Length: 373
Image (tube, rainbow, N blue to C red):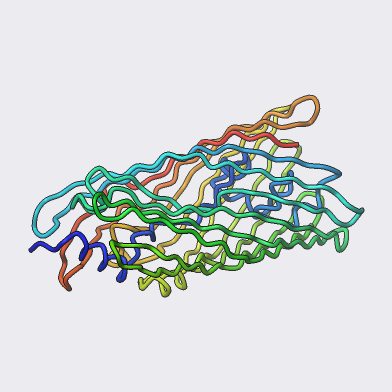
């Protein structure tokens, strides 16, 4: 059975967005984030990058802080299966650079202000033989960038509170040769709340909440305009940091991402995602080494996975090192590998199982270089 490219595109856009291949990336282009597989985010109070992941952590800054980083992302996927009972294969790839920058300044003995710009997530692929091996989609992508402006307030010796205004820009693009090359973007505002509590000089707890953002996009297929809604998820994290001695330290984190609401907006059966993980760091002189691991629960059942968003169980490992210069400035290098899962996938355009296949490759490589003081 054959259907036209236009019918295929329109049915796909209305039933399940081809732009939905987007994930909230916990990795920020800093040593602490990437080397811990994102586990150190919630307890971050080492420099200005705290405004990105844990605004209450800004209260630990003495005077002035700057954090800049460059993160290289290499994504790859591969499908194989049957499209209308014909065996097909396709591969996807995406290589991009995600920079981040943050600045913070102490204003009073209790207040520190901060501002940052970074890539929040997204993703997309260029396909060798279309999204499912049918040769239709050449490229689709979603990119999300956040501007944070916020502050931390030292309420007591043990408790710090923080918050930030989040201005999020989401842009999407799809390229279908001889039929469609459409893009649109949306900018919306949200907020982030944060708190840190020190039990003693060696141990503290942190909690952070980032509110979800709703976006609306208008895309063009031939002479037809298609309206698509996005609901970027709300995210809650809880972290614990403990320093055993002057050399060894540990960080733990668990959290929640509200992908179920994302699925409702996009007409998908999705689940809220829970994650947990840990990281260990070791300091020897001017050198600091860190490694971490993280697990994310399924955002959908295997049988609900689709070729454009086959996100099931995920796991990640990271490692890196940081060197402190004589002027106390720090240079860090870190790597992370993230496995996005390889589920069986199916898709229907006509009411039946028009495509039945499997992901054979689905992974991300991260490499970050950072500088902070």
